[in-house]
Each structure stands twice: as structure tokens, then as C-alpha cells.
Image 1 (cartoon, one colour):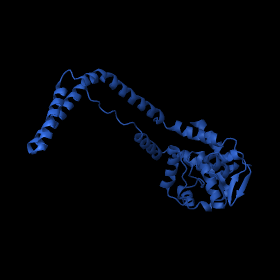
Image 2: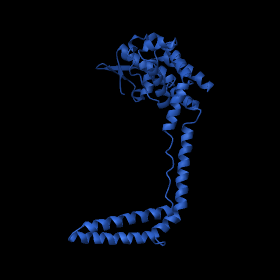
Image 3: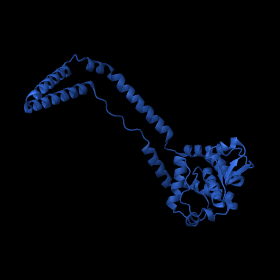
Image 4: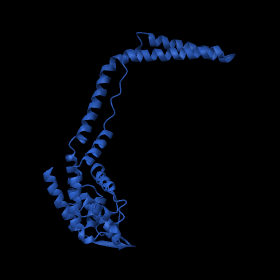
Length: 279
């Protein structure tokens, strides 16, 4: 995103996600902590939609303020207070049974697939013999129905099938002997790989998800550190750009924080810093 947009509504949209970044939801703000119906009415969304936006921020880490049709009615001057209230609501929600359920579903969806059973040498030989016999029987059946020169083709296919069956039944079959030799190491390697994937999964999705919450919050603090809120902008055909090209290259989260303004970001950072201490 290479620009900043004029207009009060778009400026509000730019400001509001910062409060969500504060609680790593990136999308659910513009209310004061009142009975749920009050702030949801202000947003113009249902409770389920609001909670889904928090889920998206903490569990997926992406911005989502789609559907909040009442954003234009939010007072810009209330950003700092709104930020604190949103963060407080999100903090409460991530400890709820609903959020725990969403996290459990996410963890289950990302669990490595069970280790597939590998054929033993005996099973491999039995399978080779079975397929060879099936091919032989099929070739014989086709040969019985064939006529003329076609019959000769199936005679050759029968010969090949008989050779394959003989090789499969041969206790000295080189391929099966090599498979037998390598089977223990291959099985061990597959098991080790699976256990490594399980270990990585358990580390990424521990039963206690609060470290993940902490990581999101720390990401916000890092993103919003030392923002130059006095950075100069230049207007080009209704689009605002940073005069400093280094700022123009900043990521979207940094730019969203800049748009929201110093009061909102300071309030968010103060809340997040205290929250982190509790985790």
C-alpha cells in the first residue's frame, strides 16, 4: 500500500484498526466498554461478527474491519478512550470459552496427518504376487476371447505375466531383498520425521495459548515503536504520500498506526505493556 487517503470516513478506517492491533485483532474497535449491545450497535455488527474479528486477529493475525458500516459515526477525538476499551474487551474475550474453542479447532486443523503404515517386506511380496496373478488371469481371459493376430498379442502378455509372477515368488528376488535390508532404516526415518512434525506442532500450538497472545502483543509494540507522527505528507491528485521515502516503504501496520495518531497508539501501547506483564 503506497498511499494515504483523504476523507473523514477513510481516515477513521485507518485509525480504528490500530486499537485492534493493540490487542492483535487488527479490526475490532470503535466502541466504549458498555453492555455488548451498545457498542455492537455503534459498530453496526452482531456479537458473533465482532468476536470473529478478534479471532482473526489473534489466531490468524490479519486485518478485518469489513462490515462495520457505522464507522463514519465514530468521533475521531475519542480514539484513545476507544482504544483502551477495545483492548479491554478483547482481553476479556480471549479468556472466554468461545475463544478457547476456536483455538482448539485451529490446533486440531493443523495437527500433522497420522503416520501412514509402511508395507513390510512380507506384505510387499504378497502384494506383488497378488497383482502378478491378477494380471496373468486377466491376460488369459482376454486371450480366450481374442481372435486372429490379436490372440498372439495376449500370448505374449501371458508370458510376461508368468515371468513377473515367478520373479515375485522367487525368495532371491533382488528388489525385495534390497527392500528388506532397507526397511528398518526407512521405517525409523519415517517415524522420526513424524515425531519431529508433532513436536513442531505442539510447540506452535501449546495447550496454553497465552504465549501466542503475548507474541501478537509484542509484535504490535515492535511495529509501533518510535513512529514519527509529525512525518510530512505530500498530496498528489488526492492521494497522500510520505515525503520521506523510507516511511513510504513501511509496512501496512506501521502506516495504520501512523494514521490512527499518537493518542490512540500511546493508549494502545500502554495497555499492551501492562497486559504483557500479566501473561
